[in-house]
Image 1: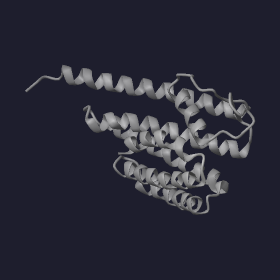
Image 2 (image 1 turned 90 degrees about the vertical axis):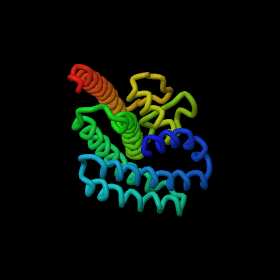
Image 3 (image 1 turned 90 degrees about the horizontal axis):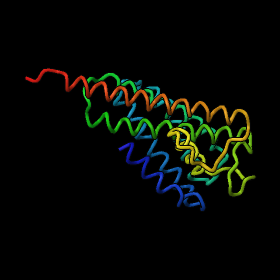
Image 4 (image 1 turned 120 degrees about the vertical axis):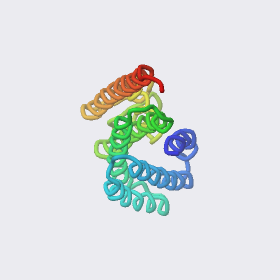
Length: 209
């Protein structure tokens, strides 16, 4: 459900960015995603209390943004969401590594973990853009603040190492964040592929009863 909701968000976000009603719906949808993230942590070896401590204040901030249609609290909610998403990704990785059989849940966890990390860095980019404006530029409206969809696009293309983004970090710390995400993407893909291949080899080598 978490993976499906995040992929749905990728398709819905472009329609939510250009109006006050859309931004309110964006905040409401963010609350839904937060709830699913907390449930994912609860279903994994992670600590549910950590998810709740991070998720509750983030939800309150998103509710305020939905009611007031004011983005002043966006950096604060984004910071909490970035931490929560990274913790949830860590919990799902522990879940995948703890099992010795390839199950359907693990395959969905592979995709959900990837999207969680992509979302987390996009939120981190949002926070840094608020701290240091003009940290990111793009081919269109180069001097404007980058939208959520642009930062999410940058995060996905960086994490997947495709390098197709027209959004570019131009300040030293923004570039450092992108480099860390590049390293995380390469390490995650290598870890997941080697783990799944190893489990597949073990399952085929095991004697059948």
